[in-house]
Length: 361
Image (cartoon, rainbow, N blue to C red):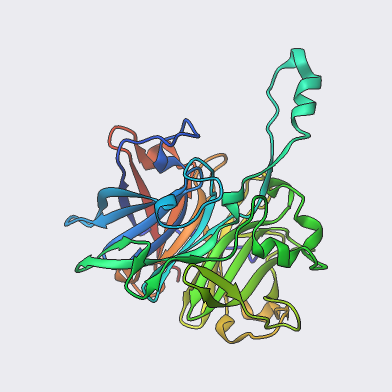
């Protein structure tokens, strides 16, 4: 990446949640945000520890609140039910649907820091877990209950919730990738070790782009490009579009950074990129010019990839996780949400966290 100065926030947007802590973590929900999508006067957000979508509504003062949670096991089929972790890492609202993708990743157990039982800690790290809910990729209808107020639903007339086929361990996408010469070897590797880890999602028409945080291949991040069709009332399937494959595969030189989120701006695809694996470091917003017109697998010409902004970086806090267009703040303005928000960004008494608005020059 070129040497740039970090973009300064031109505004902050308060996001206020109910006083609620997910069952699987000690952190309150607003400290584990992993994805964001905007539709009308609503922000739809996900926490990577839950199987739910959180809706915030725009209030008169410009903040977002009136928090309502929607449990996804009531809207779609989840192999592990509501208790199973989905690790939702991508949301995108398009054409009356909310699209969602889980990380599709495995995870290695963390060792307990017990100096008196180092052998047990080592044995613990042998365990690699796979959560079947993490393999979710699908869409749910959005119903406009009042002007600007959208509610996720299982069905809305002919519009039905639908998803790729899931299994007890792996879903359809992982089965398709198993024979891929680039990605297949990484399916059994945990996400924080450069294994498969989906974190970006963008949708246009019947095409869907998935950005991978990992693996990163010789400094290149991977974007998968699928064309989906409705196979049954609740089932989606990808067309064969690249020989016998059901996806195109684009490699972008990101200097070793993985993709954390994506959003279309016209025909260009904006990429939020940052460290892969368990690393700390700067994050950037890149622009992949004319991404919507690429219909062949391959390595993208580096001249078509531009740095839009470098994001402020702090050690151990403020990890950029999601981006959304924010046109009311000016052309090109973006909303940035963070995982592990810095203390000065949060108000624990009101379960409020402030997202940044940046306007790259």
